[in-house]
Length: 159
Image (cartoon, rainbow, N blue to C red; front, side, top):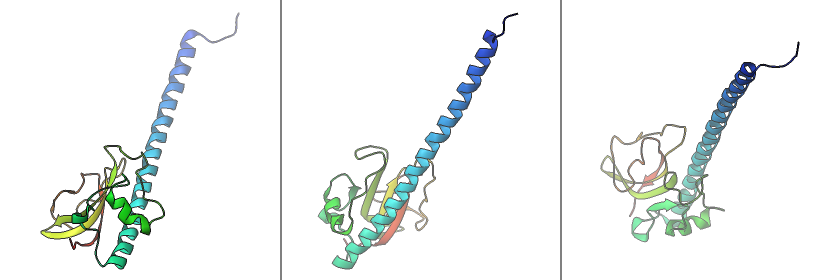
């Protein structure tokens, strides 16, 4: 009698290995997304510090009239305003220019009819956004950035 595996046994083993590898890869991708989300939140905290330093020096937050509204880390005018207060302007972990994930500053965000300065990390991958916790309604150009956006209220807007 010959010793060995039948074709059925080999197919079952290959199927089991395939299922286990797909589970591992799925968990790995989710862990990578969680790591990128954690970095986005840390980048927001660093941006908050830079905006507060800007305020301490200038007496106001960057003004929309000076081209301050918009994407952060895309080489726009806002990056130049923040450069003296940060060693490196943060860029989304997936890289600049992606259309899904980005950092955004709005110096004239309307929050319950009050104009505020706020920064957003638009679209988190695996975390729910923190929502309009200080506002019952958002308005203006930046909006709340979507259901999975995180925002940090910086202060009352001056421009």
